[in-house]
Image 1 (spheres, one colour):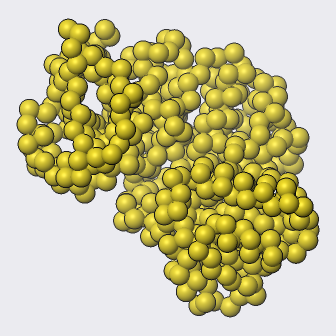
Image 2 (cartoon, rainbow, N blue to C red):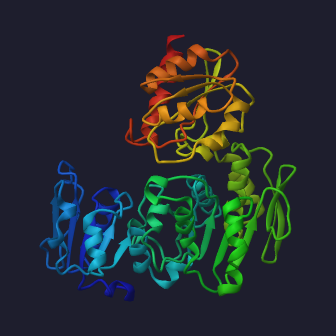
Image 3 (cartoon, rainbow, N blue to C red):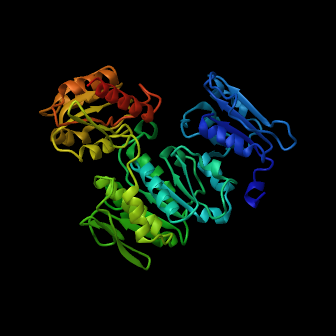
Length: 475
């Protein structure tokens, strides 16, 4: 057992939330702690085959409690030394308030994994946060490093909990970690060797209440960095740039700061010009040719710059980077081209869960779009979309619980596109094919979360793809 794990030896742990993250936490820590209690307010959750747990003497040291009122039972905190909270669990539940009164530490799974890592493992970490583009960037960084011959674990918010990589990796494994604002709520010592912030736009305001709170959470990624670590910033982003004006990370702790931006400006370490990304990082200078790549759009050029900044710190050659970029395809549900149906070009951008991501999708087209948008209301400001709707959209089809809010917003502004409200995605797709002219675009880019109508954005995107494919098969 490494020295970091001895800290947990006699601890009594409470795990709140038994989704994928909570189950992974229990499976990992149950052999090394005194006891674990796992709770979830869904009494019907099926956990029968999820655990591989036993205590040090062979008997189970794990207790599972389910029930709609379990988050109110203060007695569950008796003798608890540490709470691990799953990212989907809000801080407003009574049990969290009780634990704060009792001064019981509350960690995210990312913080737990960090405290279980050795010093050597922590040095091989790259973390990526931001409102949009996180999954693309961690996937691209991971693929470049793998193609350069390194051992890589892509983990975090992308779907593979960081805790699952502990004790399952070679000592020189590079962990590329996607980090969400929910995970950053409960980190205290988490300090990746390389940290990247891509952008900050309105999202999850229903949980974080204000954009300022959301911004503070994103910048927690850099709060524990120390001398020799690297902070990579997108200086094209307004909120990031404003933060950098008042906080000099280099002077504060001798952190190495790397800035990237679309156009060259003073202080930029990476910039774009004529299908090339130019870089100057530490003593290295060069350019990356991005002419023949699948990733399209200015937002993806920005994502590539962030990725190049990270991998150059591992001395990956320009040739390796270029070869990977030429083969790397957009991930599913991110402006995914579905081909032509009824002489209409169809695109699935179901991963668009906030207004900024829909803006980035629309920027790839002329005024030729029938846009399907809407979903769960996260209390976001959709008015930033108005200029882009006027410039790009001929038909706007609104669905989901937010449809009336968007409809009333659109009515306040002059517009030359037609607006329709539909009850289901099936109705929206049918209306889309009826209203879109031949040669134009049918785009699903909802700008909203999906959980009012679907399990997640993947299920929403797969349903859209099925409906388009079904229509095509009828031709």
